[in-house]
Image 1 (spheres, rainbow, N blue to C red):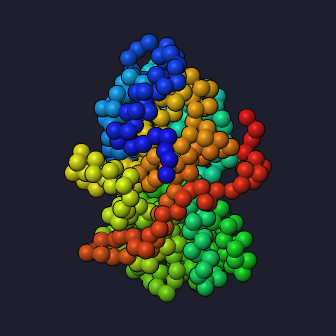
Image 2: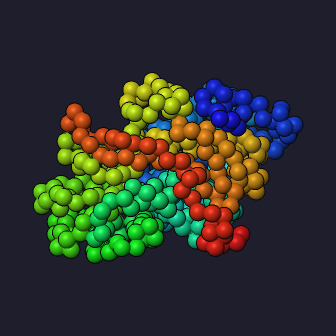
Image 3: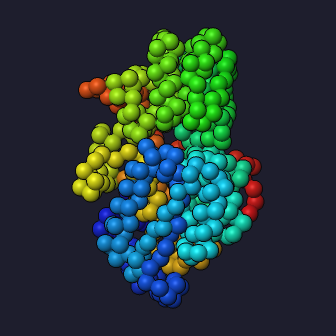
Length: 407
């Protein structure tokens, strides 16, 4: 597989040698000896994901600078905590742009915060690489030319899950999801895609607990009363732990199929320990069973630095910075319009293989692993996992043009 940007040492050839290869003058950059990127995330609210995420991007910064920086300039990341609040994220974005003169913004976790920073980027004409927020709106209905997204969207992950879920005999389905942009978007697209494949499906109940405040008893009781054959779960973090424990106690999952966004990610599966559910169809990150050269190189470097195993957040943080560095290197400029032109259609390597940022909607083709949950040695794992390329689960250009505003 050809790659325009490679992991590890090969990045040095791309990053440090690009100015020479293209003949572009170094004056395209600011005169200082460094390039600053502004990073925003919900560190205090969601440490299970954001702490591994921070370790991932810190490792990437070290690798980029060890390989010569970006066209000879040192990469510096200035990070801020948004506290899980859109207004604080926009304030942080403004401070990073106005006071720190960052070349671009990256990061965010919650979908409503990602949309808030995306709107800021559009208004202020600042390049924004959204790392984690999954709502489809960020690249489609509310997409803009200044915003790109790394992780596979709700649509992409739903399409992957529906591929397996549609084969289940279950006809009566209930849904449980946090009542904010991410949960709403995930349920809507899963129901749409599932109903297209299985017109015989009935949606018999929908539970919308507030994010971070699930009262699991009444939720489980309400779903059980609807007597579904299968359940779609979109809960994560502490809410997932409460739901699983209460659901097991009350027998909600016994004899029922469960399809679940994100539950195979170590940051959400590991805290359940021996209470982890078995047989759920999930997206996730089975780091212990991925044997590709790209992932093994990442795993070796991560474990050497942190003496710990990576979570999915680690991958997201790592690849965010590698992508940001590749975009600036290709543009040989921190001008937003030049970075946009460089990013559109850019292909680069990741621990999951080659990815591309699509020109039409600025969505990356990073994929996800789909498998089932199981117990092994007293902890939850993913088994029967298969990597699904993001490019295989995206709508056509014609469909995107109907959804995305014209720039």
